Amino acid sequence: MDIQFLGTGAGQPSKARNVSSLALKLLDEINEVWLFDCGEGTQNRILETTIRPRKVSKIFITHLHGDHIFGLPGFLSSRAFQANEEQTDLEIYGPQGIKSFVLTSLRVSGSRLPYRIHFHEFDQDSLGKILETDKFTVYAEELDHTIFCVGYRVMQKDLEGTLDAEKLKAAGVPFGPLFGKIKNGQDIVLEDRTEIKAADYISAPRPGKIITILGDTRKTNASVRLAVNADVLVHESTYGKGDEKIARNHGHSTNMQAAQVAAEAGAKRLLLNHISARFLSKDISQLKKDAASIFENVHVVKDLEEVEI
Image 1 (cartoon, helix red, strand yellow):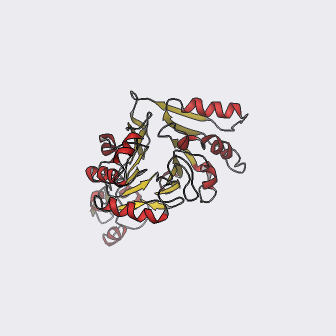
Image 2 (tube, helix red, strand yellow):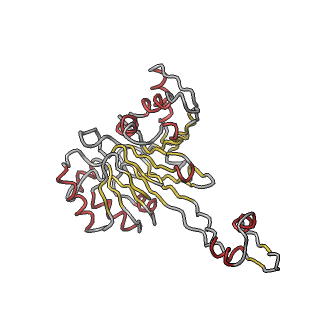
Image 3 (cartoon, helix red, strand yellow):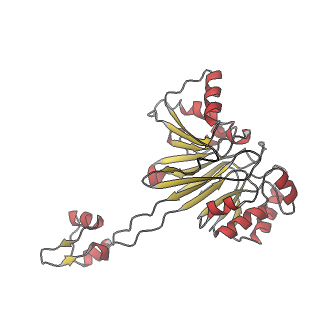
């Protein structure tokens, strides 16, 4: 499981940073990639990665500001050009209006897609659990921005315990079908009448990962709730230390406020994202240093960076 950042800038692209988009790569878990936001130029950034557009099965939009959605029509159209691959449907989750934006863009441009898009729109009254599969659950909660905006909490369900093969061999269990029975939790009896209890050879279930990905927001309790015990918290850092007033006026957070959210939530790692173009390369280390005074395990991400979870 990895997160790859396709665009880490705020508002408009710069030479160093494209606008918002990141990919949650779940290739080992479910052979899928989930995209979070799709700012202008996202499809171009993808060309510099190993991501195959057809592997993108779900797109989660945080809000309808242009720097988070203007890349959708282009990406959806380019995804249709993978002629040597099977056409697969795609799901888009986002605030009310995202369906109208996408369909209008495709209709006006005369774009025809060889796959279906299934839209899942929500408003303030229809948040909470928005997706559940056999391996993942996704929750959404409203944040505090200048327009309706949400954050997402992706929870991997607990992983099955692992089989202790060496211990089984030592107990005299021959490798083969009996291993499979024990892995499935079935007790067995060997030819010499030795009873083998499956529970003695399977480790306890491992807790799944929690990934919190927030849209644009002022510091708010909703951010903390979404990030409780998260393995990774992706939080915007449009502004820096001392910019609290301007951050509030524009519906954003500072690096210090992001660090406060991570600390209050008990998150394990904080990734600062959505960086204003006014911060030059020499300023990035200071953003990190200041935030680390509140939450130590913090990192300022950059475009195309890949973070293992």
